[in-house]
Length: 235
Ligand SMILES: CC(C)(COP(=O)(O)OP(=O)(O)OC[C@H]1O[C@@H](n2cnc3c(N)ncnc32)[C@H](O)[C@@H]1OP(=O)(O)O)[C@@H](O)C(=O)NCCC(=O)NCCS
Image (tube, rainbow, N blue to C red; front, side):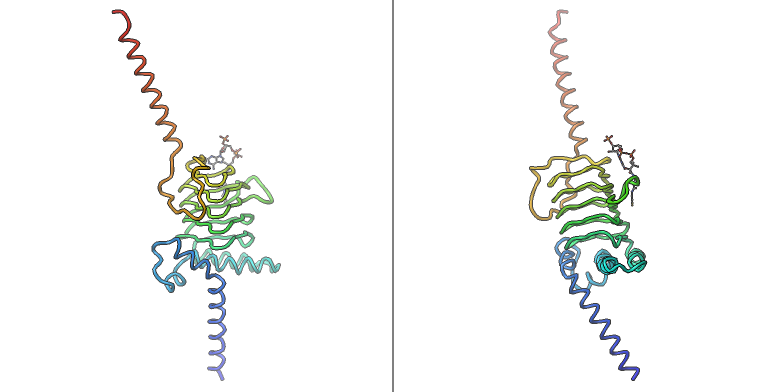
């Protein structure tokens, strides 16, 4: 009799796990699409902290939608304990989110994430500390946010934006542009617009360096003119 119960329990656990995996199949596929290190299905399912955090978020979010008290936050804190990723159950997350490595990622309560978003470790989608109500960012589709970047406040990040590692973004960013630095400076936008996901976040333009180079060119030109003027002066 005891064995029958145990088999029944095991069957329920396996069925629930398969159902959860089936519901998250798109996120599992996203791991393969966006992480060159992902080699096999079992490894991804068993060891990818980002995937585990998203699965637990989906449970916490559902419980919150049902109006269950305390339990959603408890699930979210449990997920944080295991993965180092804190996703508030109130956040709204689109399809195929991929969190690479994960540790230190924070997604605030009123954050809205589009589809195909990629986050690296240490990303904060947080509030500035001075707003109430909707106080976290709205992130468009196919956005890539580099390691350690902070996106703060009720701002909108357009589709296909790339946020450089360690950038601090406190202003809206139009679609297709790249933001780097502290505070985040936007670089070329329209000509960088492309559909789909581009993970080349290591070759980002540096607007400050570009400006400094232009200034140096102008100084060189002035020096040339000055030298020419001096050499034309009567001795
Ligand atoms: C700095 C902070 C407290 C806002 O202060 P504030 O005096 O209200 O600042 P404002 O929003 O008026 O911005 C003032 C200037 O500072 C810049 N700025 C704001 N926050 C900044 C930051 N974190 N880093 C660099 N520059 C920042 C703004 O771009 C603005 O620049 P500008 O005048 O050239 O346009 C806030 O933006 C911040 O960083 N809070 C920390 C929030 C946090 O850690 N959240 C995590 C939650 S999990």
